[in-house]
Image 1: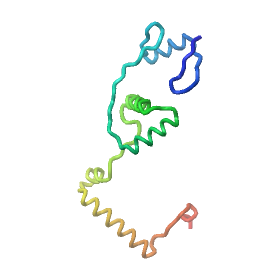
Image 2: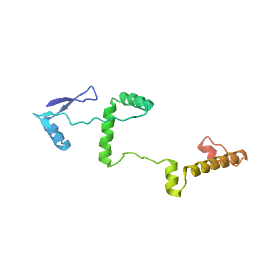
Image 3: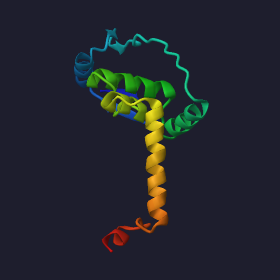
Image 4: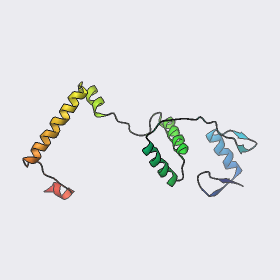
Length: 138
């Protein structure tokens, strides 16, 4: 029986040597003299919004992770999913240009026209405000 300290927690986990070997075989972890060898790593540099970086670091820290842990997890999920592991949507301009052949100016004009029409209907009393599901049932 051997003991292993989880790098992200202050807990010691008891693991049998057979289970460690099985896990290492399954995960293709390189061993040297029955100890874990350091994994091959690559340094990735990225420019991100300062406010997002600060907020993300605080959130990650609160759950016991470093930014590099989160990036490693993202990379593993990209490989596992063979793509981005969450929905990525294009902006309205790209959709309108592809779907309708509209230019950005035409999208802006349509948006302004739509908002003007909504405001006109609201002032005419054709639209009513609701704050709950019960209001919708009336």
